[in-house]
Image (tube, rainbow, N blue to C red; front, side, top):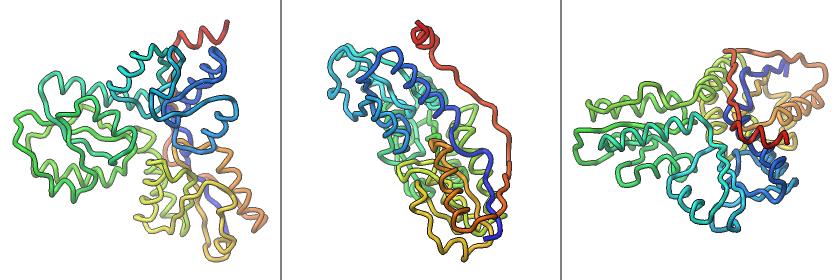
Length: 313
């Protein structure tokens, strides 16, 4: 190994930072136990650190005692989940990423105008479940260009497409090309659904793959955007692995590869990147570390004003 190159941007996006800040403020205001519906973000390190402070993560609303506060995770929830929370008289604290909420609002607007939908996303992903819940009887999911080619559905004069925010841009473009050919009247939102952070991190990892023969993506196996980063790196010619801890670093890498690039998913704390970089330097001390900046990021989402005010009392 002759060099280590760190991608920029990497790590926490504004939506993840927002969700984590909301939970921090909710803990200050309401104390423990604090219930969160689903993992606040898809990263075990973040989840465990909150569990140690009294946060309880649940998948079903009926696991939460009536009248308690509940935080909705960054991935968003369906109207059905919101109704279940209201039925149990839960105090809702919404940490849904504003860019996910944007897609929900698009679904609501199209539904109100009597549209049917094609949704590009991953089956079973919590974000997909939440968005599709806005119009469950009108939305069909496709994952790949092959799915789009095989899709059989009745002709609808009003047909729109929505997208999960964390997908591979290249694969979504390929899927959209098939859908536009097969459904020429398909409408798309004025602004694309894949979020800026996904776009920027994938652009960054493409540049990293051109410079490095090994790209390490620090992130959870449950993280959609982290998995996409690994796939993008491999598609652009680099060997790539997804890992979460320094224990997963293989000592042979420092001998087998000349340049090792490191990036991280949008829900990955920088401390994990530092730990893995440190392990590589332990295996081969003195190797230069540089940063490859593909694009500058300066986005921040402000937590709900009432939560901020309550935390200051």
